[in-house]
Length: 257
Image 1 (tube, rainbow, N blue to C red):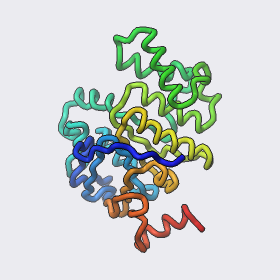
Image 2 (tube, helix red, strand yellow):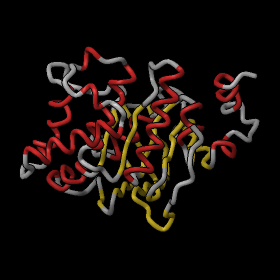
Image 3 (cartoon, rainbow, N blue to C red):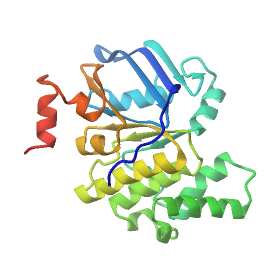
Image 4 (tube, helix red, strand yellow):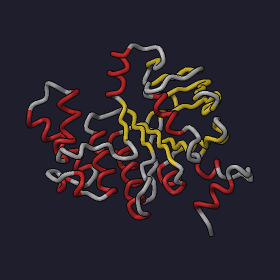
């Protein structure tokens, strides 16, 4: 599916990162990065395994703390807010984990109800049911409502994981390797779904990946993370319009002629 043009509000930074540094012992993962995510934008953070892509979204969500720099998310200073404020902010952020993070002992219905019951305590039974049906329809899997996660394919579990994230109507989506371990056809379906979520829910998203097909299909902008810094930021074609020996082999591996 061709990516549709979306309205991106470049006057509204929903995430603003400046001078961010993170180390683990002597290993410097992030070396002073700057990054903006605009309202309504799909931003792909691209890089090889172990370059700090997943560390970045853990920093954005306050799961890790940096040594230096600032992180502002939806007007909140993530590094300096209280734990209660951080918990409230996390409800406004959706996380799509690499392994889908579903509860194996719960049906799909119960998996989707869980975050609602936990975070929206005043909802009626009908409102809960309506929300569950709505997000399952959005990901095209209403028929799985009474199944167990083990009965679903890997691609279906990914979709249900995204549905469970959407049920709280997040303003920001963080996708961690959304196409990892999937066959090429299912990868295309997940990429299409990420674009559909952007359109339908007006989300702003960061997509962490090393899959160039995913980056090309979903990204309004691509940020290439190399040696702990964003070396190239722009459209997919702009990022790969280079003979940089760190970038060119990455492209050639994914798109051999």
